[in-house]
Length: 310
Image (cartoon, rainbow, N blue to C red):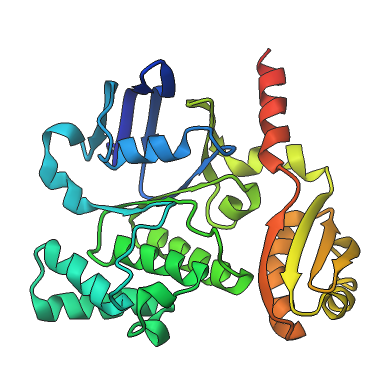
């Protein structure tokens, strides 16, 4: 086998008496890899260690065989999309990207070219010349994704990149991430939602309490949680009208209108439901503000794995 692009060797990070990540050993190759874990499992800490933003307490990170902590020049090969916002609010999206690219060492014309390409790929071209301060949550997620890929890195770390995105934007961003994987880049995507990762890749790492609990092909464990019905809460401009449009879907077991602008959908085939949802919403014409899964897919999965290991 070829050497892995990214390798963690006994990677450990503690904060005083608190262990954030403990003895993580893993290898990651080209393509898309999902890092799955419940909130607080250690996903963000592990990403920061892998990206060189945190120094390990023990162990090391190898990027293309080189120790990341000893070769600072490797950082130009890394793109990082953090979960929290830290944006230049007074700049437009284009100005922010150009500024960050200039810091990477690109000249002005090349920075402009790369910024436009990143804006196009993240479907932000129409908002490129608006101040970032006026961006919606979904647009702010997209500009973070754009800055992560604008300098054409070999490795990308995307920490919960879909938070706050509407279903159509999620679909577009997932398509982009899949394309980056096909282009040969090493892309790691963290999420606490199983179906999101499954839409992009079959290779996953499961993290719990700062340790890798399992790794492998997601299709082998999918059926462990899909036998349980899933509930999805949708915020929209007309809940009753959307309920009528979603009920005929064969994946939908039932729909409950909780309020004029909110409904809950129950499905027994979540993967297929989420795959068809963007098209169903576009056909419906009802404006959706956001949605969230009410069933913690990973919780039951982790409990099963822990019980099975015992």
